[in-house]
Image (tube, rainbow over all chains, first blue to last red):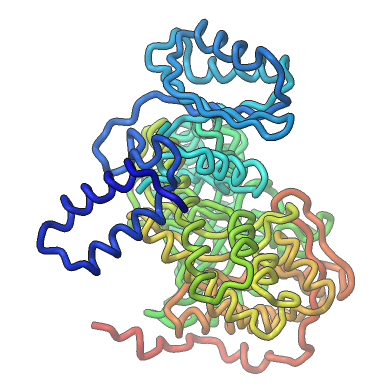
Length: 149
Length: 453
């Protein structure tokens, strides 16, 4: 696995803070290896999710939207419009296209939305049916619980 | 993005492809305050209390399931052992209580209601006797009621008198429900060291040391663990255990989240996450398949017990790390009829009752959903229970027997219940008599390890 320079610096700073100056070279090595192995180099990864259990951060109302389908022009636009009309704030988008298929993950804040979580889910399932794509809209907490300690 | 692509897709793969679901959210309800001199009044109070507290339980579970995208297979209620609530009643009067439980369960829409139970490891009260006598009729005249009786414990020993009564009750239940492949027996468990916060039926009940009302959650997820074992390829056992733990950790966390949220909506305290690997008859959702994926030719091969021990222990360890509220059974379940891998092994003749018994020494329950010939003598059923209870008593663990002496059926045939209860081939039982042994009666004394003070 290759690490970016920025990421290496980040790990080093954290190791210094956590282990202190008196840390043995073995301890630093172990720490850095653990850090490198446990987190991938994807942009933005490594930041603990909000609302992590035990973190004291209150759990917000954010939704993780995962879409799969055949790629064609306008798919993202339809989704963005649906979410925008419902008063949702798209905070992040990550997308991959493999051959003809696209996979997109959106982080959507619905705290100020005019509609409830369930209503937005319903809207999205209608879009999914119309556009013949698959959409999973799940509360962020399920990912936080499963993938963050 | 707070999560990697892979993390999000892993979760979706678990819930959509690998059958990860929450097996049950079980609301435990104390019914001690429903006791009344008259059975009719007690039944009325039971009905009212359950329908009042559980009114929104099913709707709440659905709302949480939709919100987090994790399906909840069953919604259930467990209650205080009914022998205590109806102490002083006759068998006929106890049946009124069973019917009230059934009506309440139907009214609020839960899948099962459990706790038609008695705890008689040390001795039988009048109420215990009457309840046990009523079990066959109670199970035959209700749809959703589940019953369990605890006949042994490490502290008290094994009550053979109660065991004999239960063997008779099982045979009679099989006869009374013969038109449905003796389905009553699928809702009847005999325990040693029963746990008071178990959310899984048929053995759930709301222990007397529990709070007024509580929400316990039971996770499932053999399919997810199966994929993890396959992905570990030819890793050695330490690495394999590590892979299982990682996966079990994640599903426990999801289970705790779902449990806490349902409890929040129900307005009741959250109890425990039971991190059991509970299989379903769905293809790929099988504990048997996990054992085979570890490298065994079939379930029942030499090595099966070792494989199950590693699996069971890894699940527990992960659960303990993932949640500070782990309870119930928490391990791997091996119900024959509910697990494709087990069914196939039994059909091929590779899995015997004796091997199953050995497996129960290292997993979380016991002989579960095992169908045997209808003409298996009562004393043999009793002796099978006594063997399991002895394993539980000596090893300080929960063991259970849920056995179906399928009325009018013999080896080579099968019973089929559909749904989560599945289907089971009728397994051969050794034709050796334990009659004289079981007729001694009394109680097998508690072992030395009961004297821990």
